[in-house]
Length: 71
Image 1: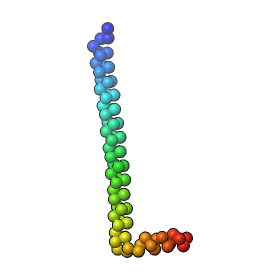
Image 2 (image 1 turned 180 degrees about the vertical axis):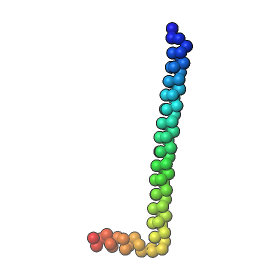
Image 3 (image 1 turned 90 degrees about the vertical axis):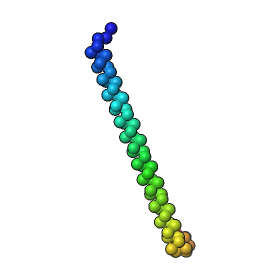
Image 4 (image 1 turned 30 degrees about the horizontal axis):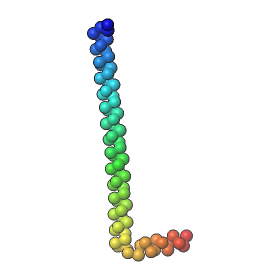
């Protein structure tokens, strides 16, 4: 039979392992959320810029297409 000290040591080790796993999971989730938010913000900014350019200059697409053809 293991004595009380060994049981306490095993409990402490298991607590440390659980804490480390929880911290790693939280860090991974936070990183994923930050990456998703950054991607969404970049997409929204690009869409807004394109919409504003098209509203200000309706023939922007035409000039872009002719520029692409001329290359």
